Image (cartoon, rainbow, N blue to C red; front, side):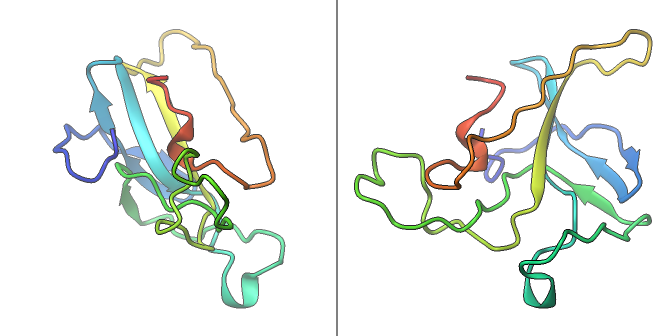
Length: 133
């Protein structure tokens, strides 16, 4: 799913320290999906090359249904064979994507997988690794 052209059934709002977020229900994979959740202020302007700054948006509700732009990457040979989207990049790239089992419950603890990208920001984008792989 690319999160740009489909209609979704939104999840109930989830409260975080940075405001509320709503994702969508992926019935096929039986998960709730939250894409493009910002975890810090954009590292642009005076915040570029500085430690991250927490968001101060407790009253904001975000609809998190689309992959955010990837971190800036260089144009490489064979880009069409890689998964780089040269035209969908931004320095404003401090976002995370979350998939959780559906239906959401608080009754039982669930396993959590945390995936850190391979690094170097050379050839991957946020949608390179998804729950449907």
